[in-house]
Image 1 (tube, rainbow, N blue to C red):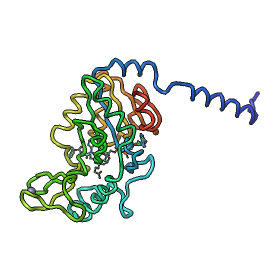
Image 2 (cartoon, rainbow, N blue to C red; image 1 turned 90 degrees about the vertical axis):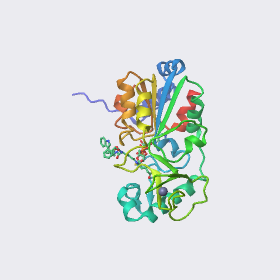
Image 3 (spheres, rainbow, N blue to C red; image 1 turned 120 degrees about the vertical axis):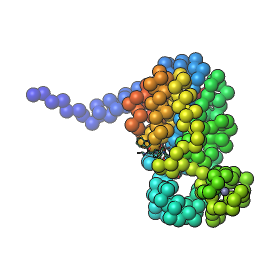
Image 4 (cartoon, rainbow, N blue to C red; image 1 turned 180 degrees about the vertical axis):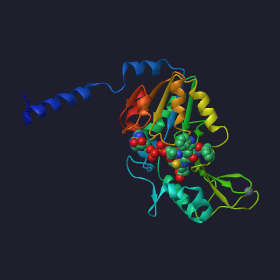
Length: 266
Ligand code: BJW
Ligand code: ZN
């Protein structure tokens, strides 16, 4: 049996050639470029990864992970915690808003905001609660999981915009009925805001190109949006440094950071 033993020099040469080949290959294929340029209806679904380069921790990997006083985010952002210790939940959300006030949208948010003027129909659905798409100038954002910038009354469901209020500490109370409020975000097992998923799903079923950016694609029903787009015939493109359960059904996976890849589209 003949076994080829690669010399270290040869291995180095081979890896250099491979690296050059990879470096010279355009990241955006001709196929994707042409579909993007011709598309009239485009949908983008984003997750925590789109805000990672702004300094917002992700939930499940890819940089820092959201932890509060040693407790993982899913313990803090849970219905059980809301019932057991509402002040602690507010402490965690007040802290997050304080951090978010210091952060800015990054080139990925900016690119997505530019796209809304480029297509006849453009839909942005985000799982993020950080408000950075709106800060970047995106309009009509579908906030599937709510926003840290709003509070909702536990009793009468009235909402308060926390950007406009001076609420920084403790539990805010309802301006309508005086009862305690909760963060207007969607926790596991809770329903999404009325009509939010339905609007995104409807646009997914008619878009030509669907971008899935910076989400681990494990939380439903948000993760079903690209699946709907794929089944309806859209060209599905994932932008993420790591593979996800959705990668397999995507036509193209652009492996890298959203803030570096999305601006390449213009
Ligand atoms: C980069 C990057 C860079 C890093 N560039 N990328 C069907 C099947 C199974 C379960 C269910 C199902 N349908 C519903 C469920 C139950 C549940 C669910 O999905 N569970 C699964 C986890 C098993 N879903 C729900 O409960 C939802 N409600 C619901 O379905 O209601 C109907 C119902 C009600 C009652 C009974 C039954 C049904 C609600 C889900 C709410 C999610 N809430 C949270 C917390 C919000 C509040 C807070 O912020 O504290 O939302 S959980 C958390 O995960 C947050 C996120 O929006 C969400 C998704 O996370 P995301 O965005 O994907 O972030 P990560 O961190 O996971 O991933 C980051 C990615 O970025 C990584 O891939 C990195 O590689 C990448 N990345 N740097 C690009 N620079
Ligand atoms: Zn109220």
